[in-house]
Figure (cartoon, rainbow, N blue to C red):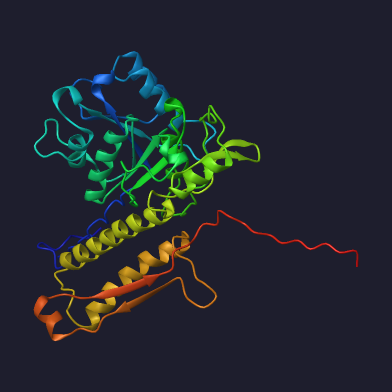
Length: 366
């Protein structure tokens, strides 16, 4: 090796692009529980997260959660699920100290912090231990206002299967109701565990499925009762093939498929992440996203990536006459230049989930 020149003739700096955001997940199940019902957790934490059933069992032995809550967590970790659940988060609600489920979820200035302040973004579906309609409805209203999660509730209210929809609940697309005449059946947790274990980046699943770890109704429903329940947009379970707990519709209290509610939230989160990465990357290079056709192409490309992922995962699907989605960059106007903005519109066709099938078979001798 020869003698190096001092100082070196070359000075080379290699800058690394900013790391992409870690995508928010949707698969971590969350269960809000009443602290006064024997769920102090460790005495200080707002929540505990269990990644195995054994961990939850140990927590129950230590007096951190009640047997009832352990039973709910057990349903989530049922070994017959099509995919294993990665984790269950149990959040305590200090009702004895004046908290409600809503304030534990969304309260300002709470100590410890409210659930939303601690939520790292991997939660979409939420369950609760309460089977009291007023408590459920109040919590549902808060979640609807936040517009970030979907609440799965179970109820045995007679009105669900005998008359019009219970007035306690508001028909909206952030609440999923399941009728079960046994309060300890935990059909709400079973549904969430069964479907949320699938990665929405890979697959948009239908929400009609067999509820593993859940007993059938203590008293069989009549056809009229089933029809009332479905007319009220509650989810009803019943016999299908070898399953006695098959949930056929998979819809919200507003009558939309749960898969559509998930697609809505998935699209918003992924689009925000994609744009945040684009803006950060361009900024790190000391460049601008120009308010012109060049910038518009950059932004449109980012949006297209999200929708293409959605089509691959069956969030969106083409028809015989239309593509699954259309990206429409909006021409830059003088008002856009003044506002320093770029506008991109998009339309997409939701990938539906067939839950009803009609066949006509004609048989002849010739």
